[in-house]
Length: 427
Ligand code: GUN
Ligand code: ZN
Image (cartoon, rainbow, N blue to C red; front, top):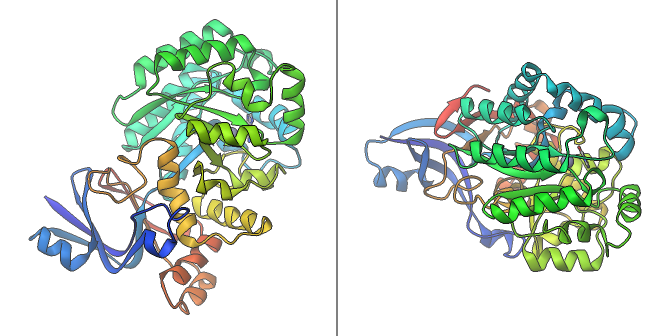
């Protein structure tokens, strides 16, 4: 049984950071995505798809824009309830707001409640996949994967490991971090749409011995992703330098412990040294741009020019980030790029929020594109969701002018429908 999800359709055929955006994209004003069960089997002009799939059922979203569901490549679901906490910078913000909240996750009922809330907020915002940190508690990993399974979502997640510079009730050890991570990986990795991610929080909260143990775990499971933070704030970098006096730079604290690789995701990556930029490129590592977080916590201006040479994904960084919406996140990425003298095209913003993030997750065959064989995870955007947006998009001369007001001013009200694995979910 085939279903044609009809609307305006935008598809990418190349990366708009290395190919001019006009060549990288195809737009169908009368388009559709054809799905069978949980998979995409075609996309393009609706007439062509009717010929290919005679008798297909049709669902009409009229002039709404159909895209792959958004992919949030770095977030902390346990920080959902402390989003928008006032007045601190990174280290103070962690100590004041984040660690006390994460300590609450020793209560498994609370972990389940927040995991479900985080995923429902993601879906309401058109985010169909995400890559999340959990807390040090193994049950916090079970909570997010269980909630994701109930919603049919592809989710990447891992137990956050910390054995120093964190409160007593938020520290594990070298051994328990390794063993708990290994057990969770065995239980969850590749089960349904769950993928386990080895997760040392960042160098300041792991001893060299813990980094070493997690590097060994990664070497034993090279198909897993590894996620951590890198060079987010200047004060943090100075702290890393003091904690690791023999390291050449921040990245070297990971590299020296076998935590640098193609399947590594390095969140923020703002204040990089030339050697770090070169090494990240050489290994093909993933950088994750978290723009609302970088302005909210006052971290700095990521260089999106790196997207021409490095894998770069886009992320909310909930709750250091100030929004659950990947639309708001794209707007912040646009603003940060403007402050660095570059105007990102809407095609580049939309690509970062879908295929760019899927690339850092090494999951382009599963999420983030409309390619045949991918999961039927879709977001349908109303390009006139508020009076302010409508009066601007009504004047648009092309799809880019029509979608840009929604990127800059849109929120969950713009999300008209969401499909996860071929099923429409309530918005
Ligand atoms: N660096 C280490 N932990 C965190 C976190 O939870 N949020 C952000 N933004 N940066 C971090
Ligand atoms: Zn983070």
